[in-house]
Length: 285
Image (cartoon, rainbow, N blue to C red; front, side):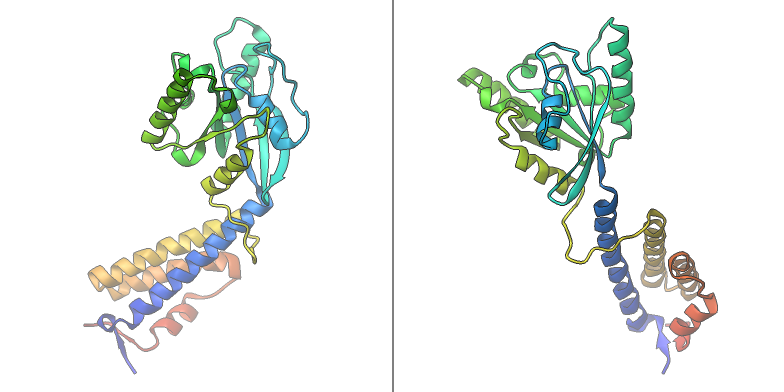
């Protein structure tokens, strides 16, 4: 039996294969998150509550907390597992202009850690920082030169339990509305009482697309890269088929997809692939 480009059989097979590759990619991503976790940096102004948040997430007093601005002068790392997701946390020096040489070195290290993070938690004191000249988003923009992708940034409003009057609550609500209007998410917490911490962990998991799977696939980064290249080649093949009806180009895209898969499965010749798929394939309409 001969199969023509226009009869839908090849297109159906392509789309089924694309769906399977996307399913494997999604499962592999979960496995990678389970194995490697994510690097999360806590940043903000001095005394915003970064170290208190680290301690709360770690479940122990890992960082020194005082009322003195600039207490944290270097980065501090801690690894925790929350809701099945491994978080490599980094506490950083408060971001401000200072003449203190040691503190300035700590701030530069903070800036480096921030740019390398998978996720940035921008912590601010909701009882105080709403009155500052720059908002948390403006501070993030200063750090990166532009606002980072919303998937990499989560705004943390600390001390939300201490809003004592209608005026301060209104200012805090205005700040949160501005953050939401610009496409970012804010989580209200109290590092003192622990209120909102569960919501924070859930928001982190959602940001990175982590849902603990029943059957996770442990995959190396190079395997995931190979799967992504395979998916791209299949997308090209689908376009060549549905838009241009170009059988030769479809075959070439499939050959490239096969090469990418071969990096995972081992050698599989182009003749094997094309012979199987196009054994009964007729170029024509």
